[in-house]
Amino acid sequence: MDNHHNITARPRNKFWFAFFVLFFFWYLLIYGSDWSSLPGLSSVSRQQQQQQQQNPIESVDNRQNSLDSISVNPKSDDDVAKEKNASVVFDVNDNSIENVTVEEQKTTKNNEIEDLAAVEKELEPLLPKQDDEDEEEDSVVKKRRARKPCAGRYIYVHDLPTRFNDDYIKQCKLLNKWHDMCQYFANDGLGENLGNPQRLFQRSAWYVTHQFSLDVIFHDRMKQYECLTNDSSKAAAVYVPYYGGFDVARFLWDPYNTSVKDADSVELFRLLRSRPEWDAMGGKDHFIVSGRIAWDFHRAGGGDDEWGNKLLLMPESQNVTMVTIESSPWDKNDFAIPYPTYFHPSSDDQVYEWQNKMRRQKRRALFSACSLRAIRSLGRSTSIDSGCIPVFFHPGSAYIQYLWHLPKDFSSYSVLIPEGDVKNKKVSIDSVLSRIPSSKVSAMREKVIKLIPSVIYADPRARLEKLDDAFDLAIKGVVERVDSLRKEMKEGRNYSDEFDSEYSWKYYAFGTTEPHEWDNYFKRYR
Ligand SMILES: *[C@@H]1O[C@H](CO)[C@@H](O)[C@H](O)[C@H]1NC(C)=O
Ligand SMILES: *[C@@H]1O[C@H](CO)[C@@H](O)[C@H](O)[C@H]1NC(C)=O
Ligand SMILES: *[C@@H]1O[C@H](CO)[C@@H](O)[C@H](O)[C@H]1NC(C)=O
Ligand SMILES: *[C@@H]1O[C@H](CO)[C@@H](O)[C@H](O)[C@H]1NC(C)=O
Ligand SMILES: *[C@@H]1O[C@H](CO)[C@@H](O)[C@H](O)[C@H]1NC(C)=O
Ligand SMILES: *[C@@H]1O[C@H](CO)[C@@H](O)[C@H](O)[C@H]1NC(C)=O
Image (cartoon, rainbow, N blue to C red):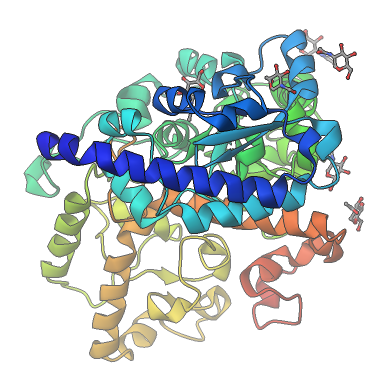
């Protein structure tokens, strides 16, 4: 394999280099009318740099600016100031970089970024990857990128002080008053390996994962994401690796005053606002993932003994996309992604194997009602059957929660029996379920089994090749949301502020705030 690669690499490089030069001239032709805005040319790979030095293009400008020269990590105030000043960098497929000053670009920047992204998207399958790095690069990453190019889904990760993430893990003994949480941080947040008791599971891939561990699991998955960038101007969204769930967990059970409970979220937003990345969209391209339910960040009153902190109520949170494991139906800015389950496959095959195991399993009961928070149980097992068809008693349990992860045709994979009807004994659960024809039941079961990859988090130390897991779908959801906010801002419009937040649940689920048959479920006294 390697030999073969070496033999073909050279001529291919020449071809691609010629292609690159042509592309470059074409690019200058289109974007180069204002030459003053193209002060520097540079390249990323050493090979390309050498080639450029022997090339007449060089004479345009000889200043070499490499990616390394753009510090994007928060270091000192000095760094921040420099960064603000310095440059916006466009990276055309990592091969040529234009370094353009902010002042000169302000008016056209957005257009160009979009046009460039479009060009990049078109050319990505054609343009060469950097060969030096290619050889070292994980082949799964290559395959993933070939299947789904990075253009339009790059993520920039904020480099936060450890106070906002790792330090909470060091305080794991404080995270739960009654229970030592430290064991759950083993294996990149997956917890201890479960093994395979009674051969219920598979040999690997099962862990004793805590339901509130998503902060760290998500961050660790992000570290392996195949489309990271250090250039925030190129990023589709900005991830803020703040473990908000662990932050608030420290103060839930004892009487702490509100200034203590809110200290880190206040400080976090102060820090984010001071960073140049915030200015691009007033934080509207930022997102935070907190592995607890929205209500823990929604302190109702000002009293010290009220539950939770006010993370979701702060002005900055109205711009940032806040991702939790259960969102509020009445909030515009928080979105739910699935709870972490026990199942963390490290390959597609482990997922297929589990799906097949579920298919083979005989169901003794037609339906086994999963818990109300059924999504958690799609992968969590033993007491609860995996692959069971969820029965919901409230659309708020899943349908309007996991919008990025579950299909909109709810009845294709689940049953909704209104809780009021059950309480008033208007219907019996048994009779509703037994009336569903068995062919429909089989179809639903198959659909549920197909949904398994969408609601589980792969092992952060590995990658799935073909399947998208809950993390991938979350990124997709965030990127689409930020894209639409970006578009709105560009058009000077404000759709997302135009509807009453009371109707957020139906605006996001159905794209309208028109009356809906579920309105009764979401009425509340204001
Ligand atoms: C930023 O640019 C201005 C002029 O454009 C200059 O006076 C100032 O020193 C620069 N600041 C830094 C930190 O480079
Ligand atoms: C290009 O970017 C680098 C790093 O930010 C900066 O030091 C340099 O002054 C910039 N070049 C020009 C010509 O603006
Ligand atoms: C971003 O910069 C850091 C520190 O210089 C480096 O370790 C990392 O590999 C870079 N990431 C990407 C995607 O270029
Ligand atoms: C809150 O509690 C902390 C630590 O106990 C204390 O230092 C601080 O003064 C208190 N703040 C208020 C406003 O009571
Ligand atoms: C939120 O974004 C808007 C731009 O859409 C901006 O004007 C506002 O200052 C931002 N809010 C905060 C707290 O930064
Ligand atoms: C959008 O509208 C809301 C009020 O509906 C307003 O507070 C906000 O500043 C507006 N944002 C922009 C960017 O116009």
